[in-house]
Image (tube, rainbow, N blue to C red; front, top):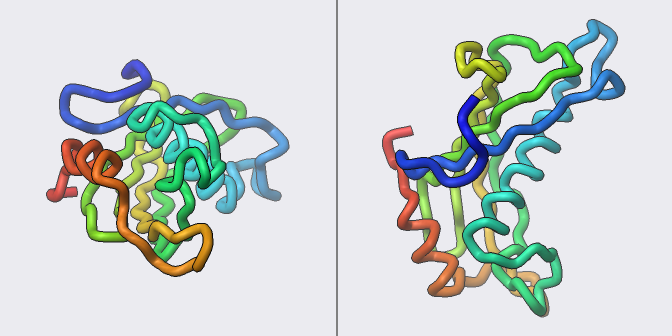
Amino acid sequence: MRPEGLQPDSSFVVNMKTWFDQTDGLGILHHSHYVLLMERAQKALFVALMQKDTLDPAIAPDVYVVVRDLELHYLKPVRPECTVQIVLRVTQVRAAGLTIAFEFWDQTGKVLHARAKRTVCRMDDKTHQPTTWSEEFRARHEALLSPNV
């Protein structure tokens, strides 16, 4: 299992435990929980890069976002309870948009459970309209760009 955090290849790794109460009727991780794992993993990336662990837009305006697009492909079921390794790669940074690719691996790194891609749009917390990323946010995410994902 790769260690958590930023990797030499500019990806970001988060390890998360899944639980029995997240299963569906077949005893596998319910599809909706992949999205929850993505949310938690992306927040971990934001915290690591921006050094702010808050959702308060007054303190961290770049985390005031909405999901614009989500693509999720289920490949092999996850059977909780286990640890899932989530690998994030920044694939596109636009004026107000950020696209991140996600891979859900088993602990050994041999079984790819799912692949996803999600775009978030930064919003102004007063007007609730799209607005540009801060220079710091943009620079830190552009430094991790992996456009070939």
